[in-house]
Image 1 (cartoon, rainbow, N blue to C red):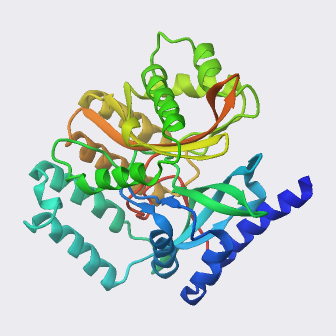
Image 2: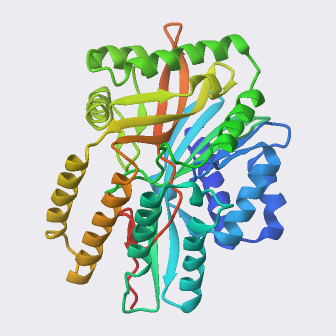
Length: 404
């Protein structure tokens, strides 16, 4: 039975991967029929901050959009983690997205259009302060004007994909998915601040998610109460780590994914993660009232939008950047790439400092919970930051594909 189940999950990943290889929009209905059920609610959270897709048709649209416009995605199925919990399962798999950059004239025309939006009074970008506008433009240009020797360059970007599935009529179907790009070597991509654009649409989406799941109000309220307690105690340095572990995590076979590439599968490892988070962030705020909660029997899963907050003084920011630049000197890069990296770090620092010392970063918390000793605990948990722009040389989570 175990090999049969493993083969079923492998087949799901193979179907998913093959669809992204073919990118044939004419096969979308066949693809959806194989992996989803029209009679079941389904959601996908994409890489962008406001990319929350609710329902069969919106999920279908995001796949069509990916196949037509996004990079070349490949699932690394042999590195996937699968957790089967009776008739519910979690698949967490690394993947890559190949993205191409070029130094042709149409690229510069496109970027000039982006910059013009900062001065178009009808755009959200125009509402930002002049200081923020100029530092963001400078940051964008430091990626665009990194002139390489080749006209076109291909990069592989790391990405993570999570699936939550249920077994229905002897087949596994997808109920929820999340795409996330790991944050490696740079600050989170999306930040909220006093001049940031209106998030009414994002909040509306979250409200729609809340209204879409109303199967068991009592169980949902139990989950919400747990999330509220988790929110108040997770970063509390006065709360002992053992108490956090015992109160909120399963007693065995735990799986936790951080915002970078790190994975944690034991209580001792998770303690180190919590200590790291307490050092990185001053405050965590989870929008528990507007969280998405769904159930399959005695298994629950939740997706919550929240914020991580930290005060970083300008002097501290400069010191961090100086230390990062010192590290660049010792990296295995050619001198030109080192210069590109140094310029990016400086531009990023000025861009972030222009928004003030109070850093507020939106993030997602995705988890699967089970009942142990008559209380809900996390079996799986993922922290993920939204990621809006794929730019050349932006993060260490992308690697240049060397051409022969």
